[in-house]
Length: 321
Image 1: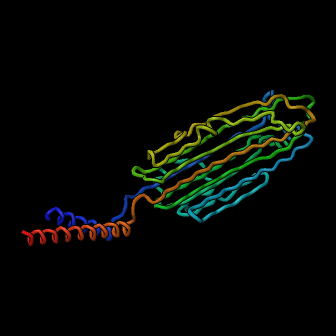
Image 2: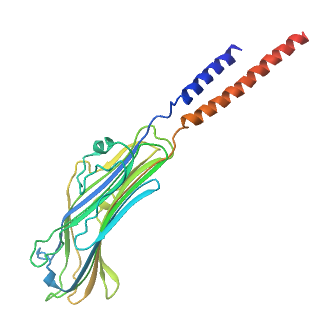
Image 3: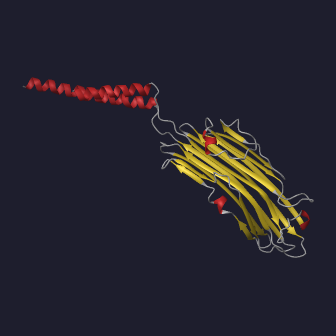
């Protein structure tokens, strides 16, 4: 009897605490992907930059977009033209984020931000070739950030920029085309300790260039550096919470790759794409206070019934003696 009474007292206390609003421990998810491509140039085999006068036909279209979401709310914008610059997109508590801010402050900078949000931004400047004698050097930047600080939230960020170019060479002879640029990638995904199913965060980025011979329809050159397309993708799940990051120190990588000889008078299609994508998912980790109170109250009723049956049994046994 004493044991059952102790159980009833403990269960009643637990139900009281639950109904008073003592809920599950807080958990959080964060993710960031930033890809900064600078000094992008197309070079002759002798190292000189290509000029617009090197082509009998040159048609270029640059397009960009930024999308952010938090649960069922979305913000999206896009732009196209010689130098697209999409206004940053924000859903949630990211209204104080600066426009065109692509430097990362490390994981701690994101952890200090309050609330849940999805964020994305993009900017493109310059040109990969010299236009009418102007210096060559394109600068493409993409960024996406997310955070969830409460259960049952899903946040995403997606920023991308692409360049589509049709060109025909007017050179006296065939020549190669060297792609040269610098890249500063940064990726981070974090789950707080104690995260329970189903919780995850991921940051991904990509960059590539593809040159297609429009006469044959075949790709003659493709380049996608592993430091961006492989190492720049990180994630975490509730299987093991913690931090995964790439290039926390902000190292600048320099890349250079050359096509085979491109034929004079031949049409080529050059496609460049760049993206930064993040997501964070945080589902319910523990019962909410109200649900916990109902559950424990049910236990009290069950244990009370057990106690009454035991006492009634004792009474019957005493009558039989």
